[in-house]
Amino acid sequence: MRARYPLSLTVPLGVTAVGAACLVYAGAIEPRSFRLRRVTVPVLPRGTRSLRVLQVSDIHMVSGQNRKRHWLQSLAGLRPDFVVNTGDNLSDPEAVPELLDALGPLMEFPGAYVFGSNDYYGPKLRNPARYLVEKATGRHGLNGNPPAVGAVHNPWEGMRDAFDAAGWVGLSNARGRIKLSSGEEIALTGLDDPHIKRDRYDEVAGGPETDADLPLAVVHAPYLRALDAFTADRYPLILAGHTHGGQLRVPFRGALVTNCDLDTDRARGLSHHEVDGHRSYLHVSAGCGANRYTPFRFACPPEATLLTLIERP
Image (cartoon, rainbow, N blue to C red):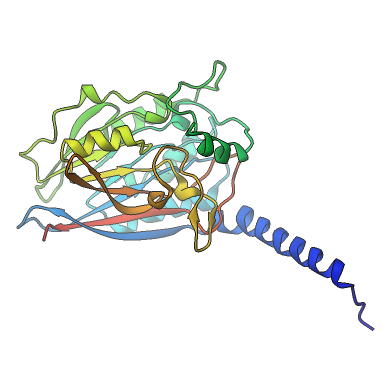
């Protein structure tokens, strides 16, 4: 005979079971459910062939993440025209060799990169509820402040050297160019990470180079000061990461936080940014990893994005 529980116990037990199932899903299943987002952006001049850009972001590699490593390697099968890495590659100072192995096939293609705070410094254990508190008080993440004294130094220099040796263009407060095998030239302008106040827009100000087939702006964390500057200078497309798409999204509600001053409606995917009558496309990647101390995702699967750039209407 099956036991019957009183309603006063049945409801709490049901809620507990659902909560436990959500935790298992968010911690063990969704973070390993990698997928590719496809986006079309009309930013090219008339007469220019379509270009395919693969954006990878927020890998947060930890030693032993073999499923992620193999998935990243498989993205080379997309045969993009070029690759843009928008930072936060590490969440483990010992994981640089595995990160470079994961990106090795992609480094056969032309590419460019910026770094995020987790490339420079190791993550710290912190209460995830602080993100909600900081949003409510207007203190977005580190809010543009350098990390605390004693922050763990990540061996980012070796990662940078490997990217440079592969021909990828470093864009930390710098300009650079990618020339594709088909002849098109991409003029890129990038910033170092605004999240830890390393951005220096005055070093790259002046607007895009007009003799290229496409000017492109790149930054890790989409703080409004960076987006405003790029848009005011009339860059047609800005690529960013950092937000993890909110990481834990509420179904039918969306992201609760972005860990910067960008609004939650634009925490991931393609949108617009407007300032002073100028308008740019903004693409924010939800990324394919998470801080090793908060390895959860819910309603926000890890992703890379294949952007197909087409002629403007």
